[in-house]
Length: 107
Picture 1 (cartoon, rainbow, N blue to C red):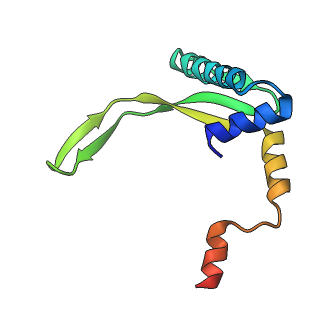
Picture 2: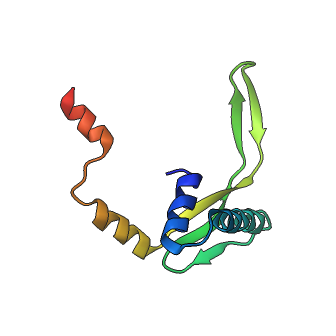
Picture 3: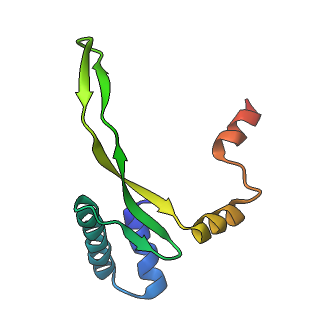
């Protein structure tokens, strides 16, 4: 599902014009980015948490020049789904195989 598909579905289910749904979603995305970039995590009960994870400093390698490069510690954004979210997805997908599994059987 793409962002435009999400906007269409929300608009159809709520009756809110697509333009208003777009503005709302864009504002939400911006606030999530701003909060995470300022070190604030976002917790949405029943849905999940948008958090930042700390990556330790390490030595990497520039393979073109065969030179060791120091990668400083940094933070990356992550999403951790709520327990209810995981249970709902698992229960609805139960019995369904993934697309990859189906392709392996046909070969």
